[in-house]
Length: 333
Image (cartoon, rainbow, N blue to C red):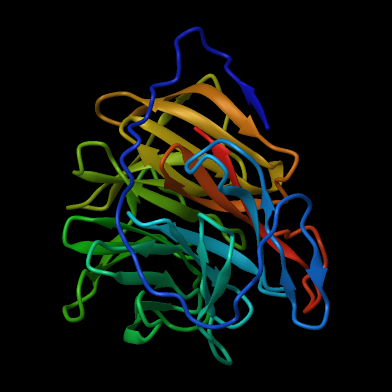
């Protein structure tokens, strides 16, 4: 892993307090072991690579996912379990971060997709489903407890999600709107059109990763093309472009993760995490450093446990076949 700190002030040190979540493990167990990872072609399982340091001392910093899984999103709660979604069939895979062992929690199905995920304190897992759909799962059983058809199935890409206030907010990479799904099992979806500085570009991914501002009053959205950050007013939908200091852009910006006023921007095809310090109103973001790692292979989204960020490698530049191998990796913060 390589860190760069282009500014003289130090990166704000995040709290070690873990966030939300917890759940139970089911089938498709994957064995773990120390040293280099190995693969079993017959079962599609692979052993985790274990190294010292980090959240649990000897916890793995790399773990396998099923061959052909096509991961993109990752969510972690207050317990050491990571939930990852599949672009192949909407399956959800759960890994024990202490051992690297994992299994299928939700088997998915034809026509289903799972990209961005967030885990709530009540055990509900919110999943962006790409084709106009958002789903809510019980993270203990994997059961689908609600399906929300946010838009028409075509011409939209429901991409990522964050939890803020009483709603789970979803981005649409192909339309200038956010969608607020009530947290819980019932309620009415709110559509929030994006206005102000926001200009929707045709035929590319626009809105992607999303997090709340430090004061909890607005949302930060990354626009993957051309690589911009926006502060979105929750009441009006007015999007104000965030001024970047020390970086020209955040091109290929995908997942966002925030700890206090420190914002982590995953730039997928650049195999890079850019680290920014937000001003008090989240209208200016100053680059304080970058994180790279030789194990990055187009990482898309990030989640935190303890003093680590965990990311999934989507491997967009590699063949996306049933035999393609995939991993999750951890880096210290």
